[in-house]
Amino acid sequence: MKILIYGAGGVGGFIGGKLAKTQHQVTLIARGEHLNAIQKNGLTVESLTGNFTAYPHHATDDLSTIEVPDLVIFATKSWQLQQVAKDILQYTNDNTLFLPLQNGADNTEKLNNILPEAQVLSGLCRMISFIKSPGVISNPDIPPTFLFGEQDNTRTPKVETILTVFKEAGLNANIPENIQIAIWQKFLFITTISAIGGLTRAPIGMMRDNPYIKDLMLKTAQEIYAIAHAKGILLAENTIDKTFAAIARQAPETTASTQRDLMEGKPSELENFNGYIVKEGKKLGIPTPVNEMIYELLSPQEEIARS
Image (tube, rainbow, N blue to C red; front, side, top):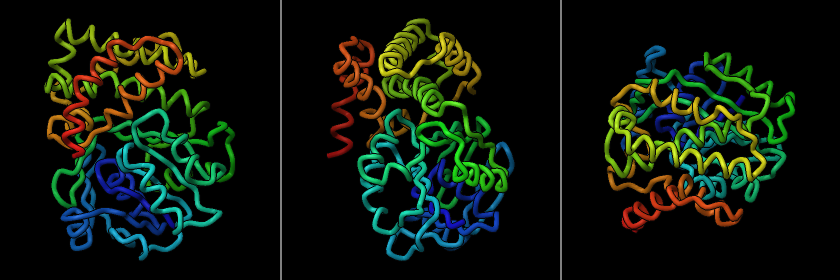
């Protein structure tokens, strides 16, 4: 299988590196010093599941040099997804499948507006990873898990084939019964902690140990849960309890990627996280005051980062 990983950062670098160690032909889309290091020395992954170095078939920032892929895995930030989908479209064909792994609740919907809907899958990953240095990916916490499936949750031969490829690479991957519920479970978790982390500029251990901040996170989660149900995503009643149990299990020094972007003054996924909940709340007539407060407080910084 010819696999293109669009974005070789924390997520794309890990999954791309694992896949590159199989017989499948893997192309990484990267940029700058990170790309130069991969082209020169290969891609090194330092993971709690095991360290390795992989040598992809091709690493480039020039889409015109790629072969038509059988599978495109989108591993950019969610706010970049629409543009990269437009960029890659001309280099694919009617048999190419597209799998988004970004954080966010509406990535599949965004892709459906640009790519052939029958070729678009839904997916997510659970992991903490980032570029440690050019050519080096760090996965210090949370053993990576990858979930994906058809938009209508049918187990088709094409998703079974992808699952087989992922298993060959030693990836912890599965096809859940309902991929939309899985995506919203992840979305509720990451949106509950990310922007509040950007406001407090504190790791997760300090936030969960502070009663006021923990209550703020709880109210954030409750609003997200209400929006999900209003959209027909029937999350289980214990979803929020499970979310906070997961928060309690995180290493105390943990920070989320969007939180790190906010703290470093970079463009972030704020619009796709709390901003999305605020907009959906207004459409559905559901108040989201905590998410709106977080979103509005951070919006000026986001505007500066994008200027």
